[in-house]
Length: 484
Image (cartoon, rainbow, N blue to C red; front, top):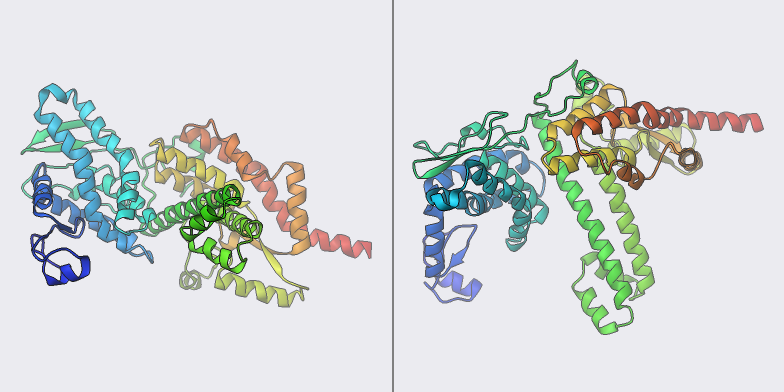
């Protein structure tokens, strides 16, 4: 990799087409620039914190993204971290510095803090777009951007790395993390800004029964994010975003196919620029629009199921090695996994099942996904934290009703009894559609109200679903014996 400030040479001319020595390398986030644009970048980097401070923060931000680097396919997000740090510096910190230096524009310290916090809302969207421009998966861009913003400002709401207290550049000045509950403050020190935003407590919930039902009882402000839990949440966020993108893509593709089916020329142009999946269907189905739409609709439904599963899997799974060590595989991922399918096949043989068994979630995934999704929404609005989400999931697990794809939440059922079970539960109103639960929670706007409804669900419809599923197939077998 060339050094920053290095002039271009014959290799760059060959690869990128510009004249030798006509460009200057501005770093991995900016690439080769003209002399004029390079000088602007240097000026921007040196303004405010100065290049040394930005580099220092970038290094610390990289530490915070250590969890992300352990997820397959996401390592390229680390290379994106530096760009995000500069993005936050330029869109949030620089305006705050400029306003502070001009008393006529400064307003109150709270107003300056508001400038910075407002940029936090832009970070994920801007990060995703910058990621696209750099050829990075926008899901990664969004996740890293959010983490970078929280890390650089010292808010550390996402708990991605525990390094907020190290974000003070050499020589003092710059960023200082706030204590929980501190009011927004901005002071000028050494030509830069000391940001002290309000940091939300770890667990913000105050609902006493829920707090008492986790880890032998905890208090508001407890920190529930472990290393393994942090990895799970990052993976969960990426999965959720991926499934949502797929759903949106399939909906848009089906809409376009319906609208363009009477215009062959524009239809072909659309297909040529569509997803590889749609292009493959176009080829295999020989341009049969109805067939292709049917396939895309199936993809959308699969993605919707995947979204619900991703939302339901809040707590970390046990590895098979860990399960062997503790003598329990109850918290191993068994849904369509190698270990789960192997166990299902063994059960099919032992029961001499005609055909195959289907994996059934005892705690319906659409039900738990709607509630966890609501907590995600509150988190996105800064009305909750990731710790509140973990609190919600741990409370459920402590009630013996863990959600998601773990072995403890799955039973294998023959196809007909499985279909009959869902039909009966839906007819009774004990298992609604996910969209019904989403509507029921539409007006919930705080953590404690959501937790109260969650506890009511656990002791009501969720418990009924779980216990009914456990006895359903044995009861079905008994009835068949009696009929004989």
